[in-house]
Length: 235
Image (tube, rainbow, N blue to C red):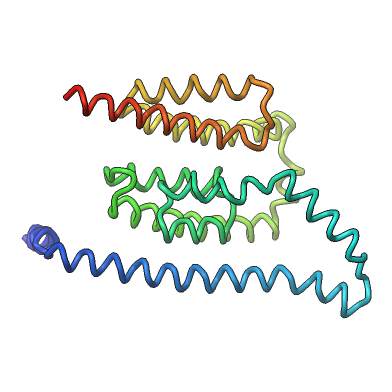
């Protein structure tokens, strides 16, 4: 009876109150997201600055500039495309956490999608955003715990594993992406087949490897949106 009453109370919350709650949630997410990211940037810069100016190991501005230009030319486009392509699934808070912790494609994105799927939330909704943020938060905490455990004793354990087990590690990432594809393809097999066909075509095409994932995401979204709009017009 208590659970039913809570359910009724949750459904009876006025729409303005829900909107105000999400606005406050987004405001807090922006504040803490920006704060933690800036702190991380400072923490990342402190060691090289100390080595350069504190200990006198500065390599010279020419070498640094050449390295920055070379790296930006190689992967700079991802600085713009990744936030755009991942944001619809991750949401505001999830995007901040994902770019803070890293492992976006192989941890944050699948965990966000799994959390949304577990409660039946439609991607892009407020319910999905909160579920995805919680999924990323839990995944990040588990990841930290696992990393600490591996650092303390993982190297020794890996040396004891047989060669057959070590070779299986190469299939972990494809298995994760396959599971995520299966979750969404089960709901709409046509869109799953489209995504699979686009992925196969892009993977086996002579395209720059760093932008293959982005091309797959953009093409799949564009085709699915086109089909959805076409179906709405026909209806």
